[in-house]
Image 1 (cartoon, rainbow, N blue to C red):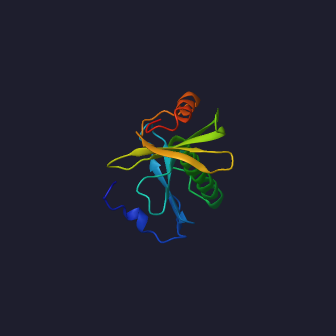
Image 2: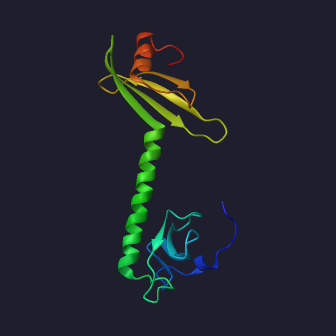
Image 3: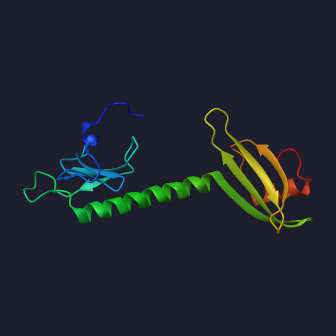
Length: 164
């Protein structure tokens, strides 16, 4: 986290300037592109220290200064930044929650692995459910546990032993 104060962020909501817009819970700020002579825009959601999106920004007509922000551009930037956050959340969810379906002596089962990314002691929960959604078993496993159809089948066929 960055504890340095950024005076640009003191602009009240709904205020627009050529290189800084704040509205609808978002701040768009035009910055110098560190990788070349051009400009970039960063989109930061209110309350967040890091931008959700940083991308190239168009040069103005003088080919030296950035093109000023305007309402259509800001609306597009907000939509794009929200999509980036949504994709990140989907990817995180897919990483932390996995499931497989298997056939066992008890019938068709769904085996789930839910990782709990605790900072001090991360762990995962392995659980099995029958077709009606009733939980048949649950056990704690290492957060590095790799769920597969084979491992789930072995766990179920072994009577849901202590570890998957």
